[in-house]
Image 1 (cartoon, rainbow over the protein chains, first blue to last red):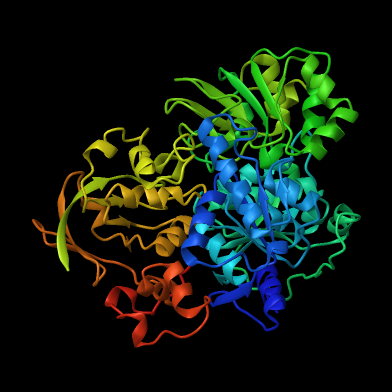
Image 2 (image 1 turned 120 degrees about the horizontal axis):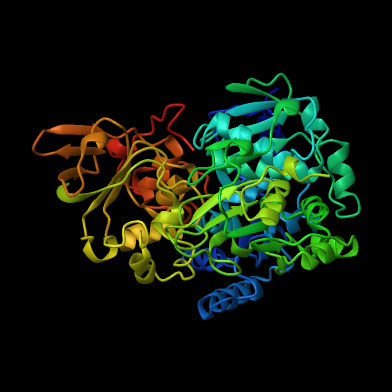
Length: 412
Length: 189
């Protein structure tokens, strides 16, 4: 009996668990990336232990790839050496970890996943307990096959009704973060429930879980269902554990009427400072960015391409697909052609300019309107640059005008 | 176990991009990370910080990314402890794992000025402001985090026990008041 996170951890341990207790739990998948792997390798070396289960380990190059600097190239060399030395069978270089792990069928419902990246919570969309940790925690998981977790309390977000396009899951999650606050779910899990949740696609669920950490959360979760299984079909032979909450006790319940959600923008420098785009339209913009683990999927590219097809962007606009699979599908669907013809600068799959390291760094006083998940001061470049977080539709509409634009003004 | 340190005062929601920007953490070298610590939001920090200084901040210190470089940068800069009203989850874990002392509580942190001299009694989990005598008593660590702290870090714990499991004995070192396993429902991660 319990919340989804209690059910998953209980099933993994073979005994009931309850929020508040600390458990040492086996880990099904351990992930680190180009910037977090070298520290994990150092920690493991200090421990003097090998990776206990190389088949449960995966290293992904996504943060600065291909390397933009000598230092970044050196980090990748060290990560490659670690992969070779430990006999890790998977070094993925085809996109952002949170996108390519499920694409490669490495996550199934019921799994416990730890990743040395805070947005590992994205994978909770598949009914897994997936959480971000530091490199030393990841090294301990490598060495022992286990991690320690306090079983978190759960905030339930009950979704009613249907989103009204061009309003999207991104607008919804900015509204959820606005209500709960940047630390309102600290140490807790955020479980999406209700008939409105069941109707969402996997991509939409990933966008919602992705921002759980922007509320301080340890995990974001959806109960697995046929949508989950259909998405994973053909990608993995591992049997899923189809768990659901049973008589759950939530610490808080928040009901969101999807029909009432509007296009939202999180104003700098806090993710919980969301407000309707219509209240701030016209704000001058220096760069638009469409992509990331939040919004770099095929449906995001489809939305952007539909708005930009046959038109020209009025401002520097960068797009980066979340993975090679997304890139190829967007290419075959004609989305890439529409974006490039509109003047969009298309980047290789990866985190792109989200971290302010390459592919679209901001100068002093510049303002970006982006589909990413964090608008911290200076994250994309100069400390006096600004980041506004929006949906792909709002980003594309803004690209057309060079000013923050409500997508309802340009749709159709 | 009491020593004086200078306060570096910060506000609420200090994030890991501020502690060590993404442009400065493409390395594992502690000295390089120390040079980049608060490099953009407090450019004078790296040059002026002295061993034994203390960071005092508000709510949700260390929110944002999971980069462990943030804890390493603070440690390598010579910071003795971070005092905050509350800590973000991953930063908290990273600090406990790497043995960076954290004091969590709101009582005195709000009134301490930048540059103020304070005394820290880490064994007691206590901060004292000498001129006013104000005291902050840190919320105790949870049982598991206290176990890690008792060993000086999670790698030492795993080295001692072979895994995360197993009970601690006297050989695992002293239990101090700051690490007494009496965590309540809200002080755990």
